[in-house]
Length: 85
View 1 (cartoon, rainbow, N blue to C red):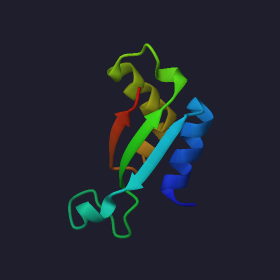
View 2: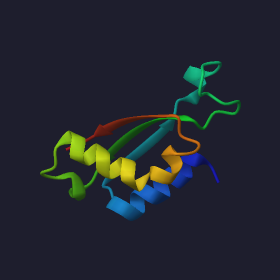
View 3: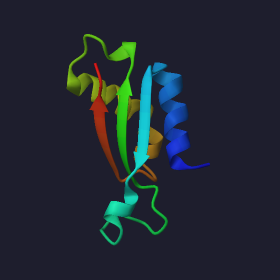
View 4: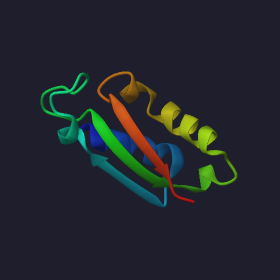
């Protein structure tokens, strides 16, 4: 299974988002430290979910990091998060 799909599964389960867009941008980092051959290491995430309403940006990012903890410890090297409110 692709890392992008694992991310989507974890985020859908944790937050039931109304918007969920995940883009693998690993190709922009090819050859850099932390960028393995084959990609699947650098991602951009756009998400909106009721769970983030009334939360600070930092609190929302922590929630996402917790939901993706196992992936952030492994295959994900970099994650850019945009929360849509």
